Image (tube, rainbow, N blue to C red; front, top):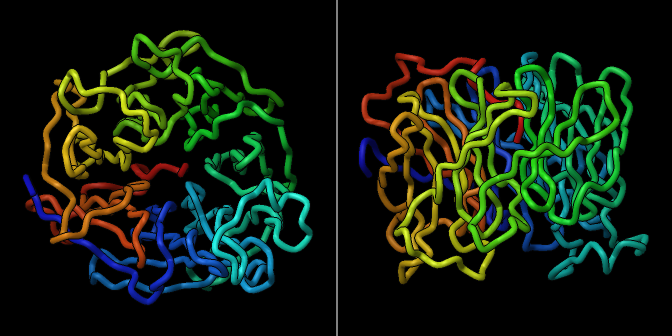
Length: 401
């Protein structure tokens, strides 16, 4: 691997859990992980903690029973924490559960088929606060009923959580001070995988065609902006919702990629003009003539995270290769150059998907894996990084999923 080495950490004590979506760095510098079980009936999400200094992995708590939803109760399970594992300045984690795991004994589950089934339906996404000091969960109750939470952002100054539900695609606000849930309604058909904040506390996501939607704190609306995530000339941008969005190192703007057929990288500066400005960097990587694949998950540009070198690291599947291989790359915002660091492979193993990424305080980069049992994460350790020198601080850690 160019510039460092790649390692794999397997959560072997959870042999049937098959994906990790929520991955973050706590204020204590530890990595917090939501190990999910989507493909096997009767599993609930586990919280894990990884210590960069000692390479120790802790299995902390099973979330379903902790919020009063044991995984064998017949309901669709509290199987996941999607992009809803958010660190706070108080050291706690602010979380929401997600759906897709089948009930105990069932091979699969469909939310619409079970919507009115009093037993097999999903009760709803539990919002909760995890305290690492006590290893305890404070259950705030169900927010969206019968739905999961796909993505979440935390405005700590205003004590507000902003979330997106699945499958109905509603935007919600949870006021932590008032313990009050507010549903602002449905804003599209396609579920964005990201909701994020600017430094003034404004909240953003997109509509079905990649047009940015902005929520101003204190309002009860989402306003559509003129900025649109980039798309190919022969397409209108349908399904061009964000997959991953990260702040720049100075927090002046964000970098993102689409959950569409485009595989673009882009930058949004919310402070450039009255509605901000969106800049396209073109396709994330690949030959200029590689075709648009009919499969939505063909290229999987994911796992965006800034390194201590100021470059944007990400993963991508080379859909034009046979067999398809997933690579780790980095992008230099100053020169717009891409560099392939190497394939994410360990013998015959490569991740089914990379879901998200974070950094530890020392500069190591962590990528959450999905689509393999047991679930796991991948660590890129740049040359020269040691635990004797911190290259990141708490202020560098984003508070959205």
